[in-house]
Image (cartoon, rainbow, N blue to C red; front, side, top):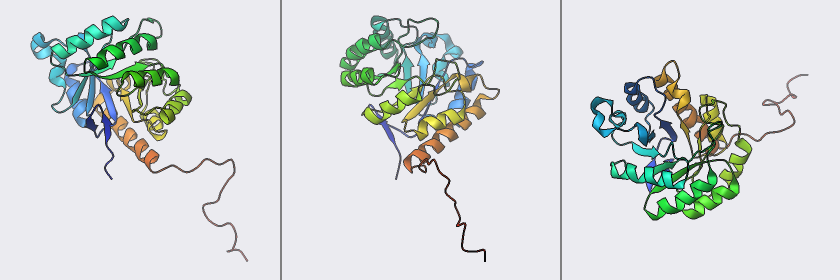
Length: 255
């Protein structure tokens, strides 16, 4: 049976979403996205310059990808809404990764301001995926406001520390009725696989791929890990036991 993720009425085959920041050379981005067969790409609007000729980052996004501009740099709901409207006016579509941060040290998202922005943007027809601090109550409020998915952080942005918020994320997976996409902090393919094995619908990775010695090969590794983790989740890994259980009989062949 085909395993398709649906968000905002769009069908998504690849559950690895990739960000486009921190790459040493923009020309590498297209090779990364093509090699990993990515369906969803996020880009900071402040890095998009349609008048820059060969330096326009959007030229490196393959045709057919779902472009998800993010509101990076917004410090409150009003700024995020303004950025989203600019993205739509520039032809970047209606998908928005809502990112509101006013904490300059840890770069943690502001759930309260995000909720305000979701309410405005959804009414204007945007498909909103908010980046958020993992919290069940706040996630429910965001869903009630119309969020198409929620994107809890695994650990602080760019830290490569992995899924440090796993216990809360698992609760959200069990209780939230929209897709849960872990965003930020994943540093290794094994950490992406862990997210998928526990039931996450997708993961978004940027730094770990962009700063790798070979971003294209690292993207492939993350893609394989996401696929493996998803298969393990769908077909149920074995139950954990506190006792040993032999895979072959221990009696019956010695006389």
